[in-house]
Image 1 (cartoon, rainbow, N blue to C red):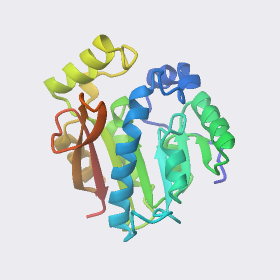
Image 2: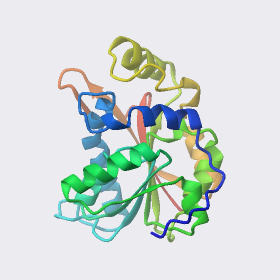
Image 3: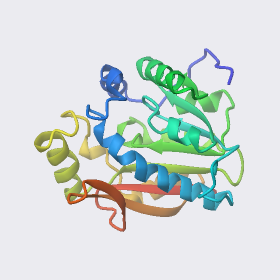
Length: 251
C-alpha cells in the first residue's frame, strides 16, 4: 500500500486512542491489561476462519485456508489477530490510529518473521485512498468509536467485490453485560483497566444489524462468546447477552 499523507475526517474518539496508546508496550504481555484479548484470540480466530472458509469455499482444515485473501484489521492494536491470520495464509493490513500501537505491532511481527503491512490510519483514510479488501475485521472496535454510522460507512467502502465480507465483534448493551464486562471484569476481577468500556456505547445485535443495513450490508450469522469458569476458557455460545460476533456480506 502506498500511504497517502492526506488524512480524512474520521469517526475515531481521540480519548480512546490515547487510552490504548498509553498501554501500547503491553500488547504482547499475556498477563497484562490485554489478557482478555489473548484469551479470546483462539475462539475469535476459529470463528473468523470458519466463516471465511464457508464464504470463499475453502477447507478450514487446510494448512493455509485463507491463502490469497486480502484482509484489513481495523483497530489492530499490537497485531494480536494479524499474526495468526497471516499464518493462515491471509495478506494482512493492520490499521490503527495510534502510532505507538503500530510501532509495537511492526516490531513484534519482525521478531516473528512475519510479513504484515501495518499503517497508522483510520478506515476513512483507507476509503479515501481507494484501498479495497476481501475481508474487513472490526474486532472489539466499534464500542470505542465516536461516530458509529460513519465508521461502518467507511468500512463498507473498503469492500472489494460482491463476495467481500465483514466480521464484527462487540458487546451487547444489556444489564448482564454491564455486570460482567464492566463491574466484574474491570472493578472486581481486574481483568481490564477501569474505564476501558462505556456501557452506553455497547451495541445490541438489532442495532448492529440496522447500522449494517444502512450501508447495504446484511448480517448473515451471529454467535455469542461465553466464558466457562470451570475450564477458564472462552467458547462460542448461543447467548448474545454479553460478547458476540457477527458476519456480514452484501445482500
